[in-house]
Length: 191
Image 1 (cartoon, rainbow, N blue to C red):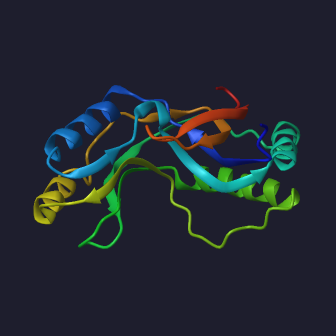
Image 2: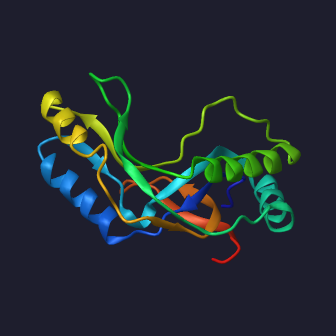
């Protein structure tokens, strides 16, 4: 049976380096008593736009538009600016790593939004901050210890991360977490 809708999103794949893997490992070890779903490093990405259920005819249209109309920025080595979390202080939900070169990310996000708007997908009125999700918090037993650990990582130095492409993904939900299948890929200049 063929599906008429795919769950899709556009993102920047993250090239994993040893520092990011070590930061993830250190967090997992320090918080092993907490209920946190850690993101598999093979799935690391920075989401630019989540489209959700997308009709297959629109999937093809978006893929063609990306190939024909997406501007190609220069590939960049981007500094990691530290770790943090989203959500209220008493109930954080996501552990993330942030990046410098915010204007570079905003330009790419603007290009994606413009291209999608031309294809009939209205802009979303949401703030955008480039971040890499490391884990999703299910529950915390010791909120004070969690914040001590996170505050120690706010300015953690990591090697820069190389970004050289944009990808259009299909997300297939499953019991072991989502599976991402690449529908289209745009390589950046110099990448």
